Amino acid sequence: MKILYVTVGLIAIYLYVSFASLLWEGLDRKLVARMQRRMGPPILQPFYDFLKLVSKESIIPRDANKFFEIAPILALAASIALLAYTPLGFEPILATKGDVIVFIYLLTLIAFVRVIGAVSSGSPYAQIGAQREIIMLASREVPMMLGLFTILWRLSKLGVEKPFSVGTFYQYNIWEIGTPLTIVGTFVLLMVFLLWLASEIEVGYFNIPEAETEVAEGPMAEYSGRHLALFKLSSALKEFASASLVVAIFFPWGVSGYLGLSGVGAVILDLVFHTLKAFAVLFVSMSIFRAITGRLRITQAVSMFWSRILPMSLIGVVLLVIDVLGVIA
Amino acid sequence: MSERETLEKKISTLCKYLGRSPWVFHVNSGSCNGCDIEIIAALTPRYDAERFGVKLVGTPRHADILLVTGPITDQSLERVKLIYEQTPDPKVVVAVGACPTGGSVFFESPFTNAPLDKHIPVDVFVPGCPPRPEAILHGVVLGLERLIKKIEGEKE
Image 1 (spheres, rainbow over the protein chains, first blue to last red):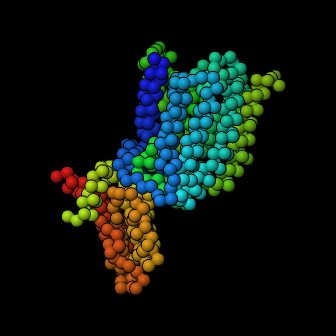
Image 2: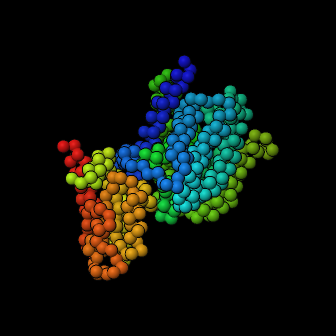
Image 3: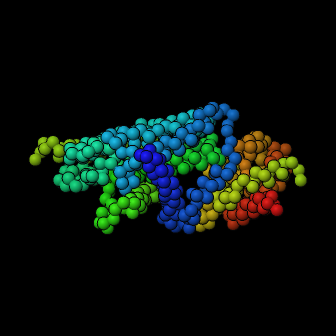
């Protein structure tokens, strides 16, 4: 019975999140176009793009090996599995002790599968894109994981049922602790997470692997038709899941408690409210960031991660740690 | 109806949403850069081709429409054919400018291979040296209309 419930829930969440994340892509393109004083495409444009790509011919290059065809399916499978561990205004379906590690693992796996697909395509452009993607992957995870584990460690001190689970954020949130050092530290970590989100979805400064004018769309250079459509969908899902993590850490409040709802109604209301919050976070970290910044070189991006964002994350972490250890009263 | 035409029709029926999101790839076959700048002008905020879903892509694998400029020099002839083959079906080819249409100032030159339709099937020729951005957008619309006619012709 439990398995049935989980399966039906996951399919429902998958359908809802695919719709919401593709809708956000359309909203994003429209908003950026308005910032540049253009009309912009219709809001449903990503759906048209998706349907077009699904119905087009899919070319397999002669030099490609078997992974070229498997990679898009694996990427979509990893993103659907990711949704089972994504906080969406309520505890993730499969929330257990320490599931944050699975969350990060699946998030990284999507990028990794993209790289495998690109390397298997046999195109030099795709390989340059894949190298850039791996370099970015190695740099961006460190500040994010440092911040995430510190916040979860701080929350586990408050005595939660499942320590190091993404579901903890709905029991306690980091702002509730309320001491000045925690608030400053959390604010610093919020900045780190917004920058991490921008690099995770590769926009603005960090649009380096998919630089369409330099390396011909990078890892996606040889993909066409339905394979490309699957990759587009999986990266849209990944976008939404990453934004959901930021929302759950810093803005976990729901509205159903105030309205006195319970049961299915509360779940649906919280899901919709969570979607709006995720759109707001993506608006800051994706649309505005994309409209006002250009692309960095890969060396500049790496040095930015290791010499700016990592120290920033360290400062936030030290502030949180000092507060709990009571070194300065 | 030749065998190729039947095949083309069959392929085009697969795709009903192409008119909603035509992705454009720009092929420069030895152009003087005049037409290329006009293509860029058609994508700028003033004309904003993105409002029809048009997107300039960096690889022929993602493209639906090929915009070919230039008189197809000897060096670029093989590349143009290769790019045409690399583009997934259904696709529309638009020859932009006087050069791929009839050779322009390179008419009867031994080193150029205009017109373009001697080498690959072309749907629309947009003459002009260079053509205005409005003319290029009109050419793309005509190409898509031809594709839609192919789709509807199959239904009847």
